[in-house]
Length: 122
Image (cartoon, rainbow, N blue to C red; front, side):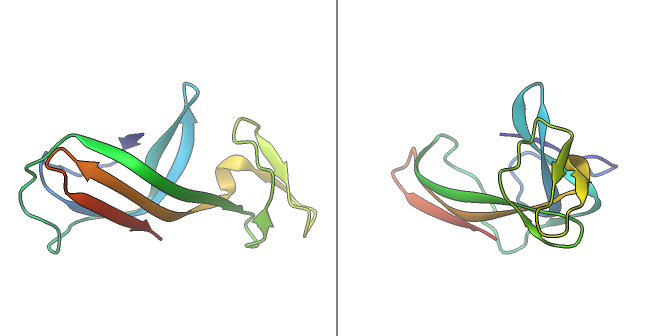
């Protein structure tokens, strides 16, 4: 998945960062991760300082995307390729660009050094 970070952030390859307030968008038919206006990009001091292994194999991914209208009602059956979705709880028609998206789940992988890694998405 591609990541686009808007603004004047200078990121370095091999460093770890804590990214907050990201959204998922379709770009040329593919899902991409992008920053929002409320984004924060901070160096992650708790992360491993050096990256030794670069190839990974994802063997388990249990990820859920949840979409919410501006009144925080859960939206079911959202098609990201349409422009507007109707909230069945409040009856509002919501532009897909104005929805909130939450990503939750767990990704487990093996790196080329045969170390097992797991990440919790919250």
